[in-house]
Length: 518
Image (cartoon, rainbow, N blue to C red; front, side, top):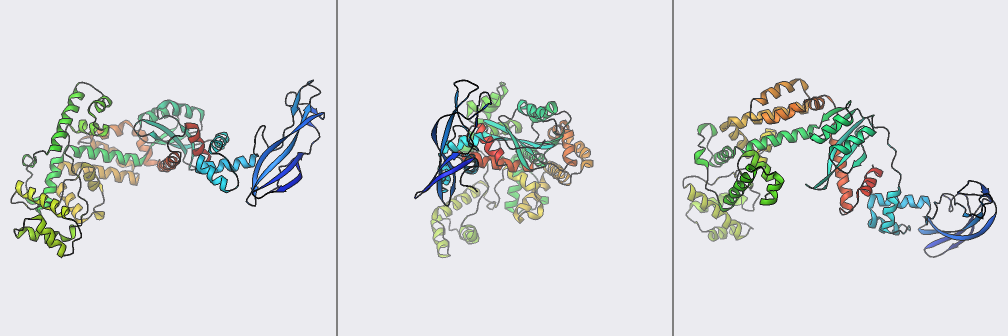
């Protein structure tokens, strides 16, 4: 690499401790007038410009260039300065140095990039790095043919944007500031080469593709379809907590499912204080909903989370919250603790001291809480043993019912078998959801019509009707190899870049960093 840009001639070199100062001048004898384009050799005067260049041997390179002023004979008394090769007008750095500093900023951002550039003998401020990033030309992009679109969060639940990826080349080709239909529709009209669009089941995206690229094939993303199916099962289980409670009780008592009845009325426990508060809030939500208020207004008035309001209104009740038990230091000593409890040693402190002699390293509070739970269970049902299963949430129950049985633990497998044995309605819906998952994984379009017909006759009719309304995209998902998987990966990278800028970046800067590093 030459020490001075082409078109300049070095006249002196001065080496200092941390930099090299090169004095140079231009080689040409004629300069072109920027107004009329006529060449002039009439030198009027000169001045000095100080320009930073790429470092050499760990030292900064400083160019002191003598720049001449010319008088244009064609324009009369107009005086202009000659243009330096490879150096923009009024710039204080060469183009190659500006590009290197901008590339550092693309990876690290403003202030972190400035700190690294200083260590590399290219000192620059963070604000200057951001200006250099904004000045970068957009990267060249061939006309896209197969794209994927999805939304990303500026601020979760408040503001979203749209990302557009070229699925054939695996790169981001644009960011849009909103996730409504209008920006995507305009973008598609500017890119008529798009022939296939992969998307989630968002209504605005479907409308934008239908109006902006009417000839393009829409493909519903298979992962989003699986998520929608899981949500449909979870919504169904929200209305069947009694069956889940009975299955958990049977798993704890050791009773075989085939040998028991299903006493739904007997399985309604008295609500705790937290449960009572939950029911009061549900009644407030239901009352406001009956008055015709939108969910957003109900959330503002009651303070209940938006997802909880939607789930309660969909289920018609506020299902009790049950947290799944986590691992405990007492798990290894449960048999000894039960034996001590059965021997009429009902004192938690005495049991804890006996456990410590056995090597138990936990505190007294762990044993005290265990004894309290056992005492409460015996007071409610004196003849029943302590349940080994707490009632799982509808989300966890949906995961267990749709998982491969060979991957479940023996306890989880027993719970699934119990639920399927005592609740035919849950078994029917879970089988349909599992069949839908197999249909998507095998991309079997032939079985789709039969599945939709079977699901329409069950509690999944609303889910099936939603799929039927987007049938063309669903069938394309079972025939085309494209999906939104690469788009989700690009969204993760976008989130990383956004967090590096502490969430304060404007849209143009974020777009530059995402596109120029694609």
